[in-house]
Image (cartoon, rainbow, N blue to C red; front, side):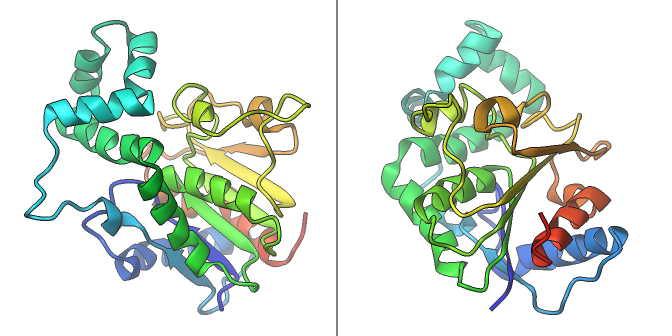
Length: 255
C-alpha cells in the first residue's frame, strides 16, 4: 500500500482517478526532487470523488433557482452578500464568469449543504487510507474533506498533512461549517497529524491572505510560493520545492 494518499479539489467530475494521478504523480516527484529527495515507485494512491458531482443525462444540470437554494442552504449567499454587497452575485459573475459561479455553487455548496453527499465524498478518502499511509496531500475542496476525515480518525497512522490552495481558513465560507472551537479558541487539530504544512500562493484567491494559525493554532506551518498566473492549479503547488520538502519529510517521518 502507498505511503502517500492524494485527494483532489473541485471540478473533476469529467475526470477519473487514473487521469488525476497521472497529473499529480510527476508534479509531486519533481517537487521532492527539487527538495533534494527522490519519490519511491508506487508511493501515491489517489482518493477520487469527482464522479459524485457528475450529472446524468436524465438529471440535467440544476436550474438557477435550485442553485440559489443550494447557495442559501450552504451559507454561500450570505458570504457573497457580506463581502460584495447586495449586488455580490453579479460582481462575482463578472469577475470569474457565470459558468464558474454555477459550478462552484453546485459543488462546494452541495458538499457543505448535503450531508449524505458529504459523507459519500469523505468515504472515498476513508477507503484509500491504510495503516501504511503516512502523508496526505490535499488540494482545494479536498483539504476540507481531508481535515474532516482526519478529525474523525485519530487512530490512523497519518503523521503529515500537506494542504495546497486550501480554503480551510476562510471564516465565513468554510470555518463556519466545521463545528465549534476548543477551549483554547482554535478548531480541533486533524487527528493523528503531527505536522501540518499548508502552502498558499498570492495569486490564489481560495487562500490568499489566510491565516491558519489564527484558526487552528500556531503549530500549522504556513508557506507561501509563487504560482504565477496559475494561482490555484495543483501542479505548480506540487512541484514547488517547499511542498516537496514537506512531503519528503513526512515520508521520512521528520518533524
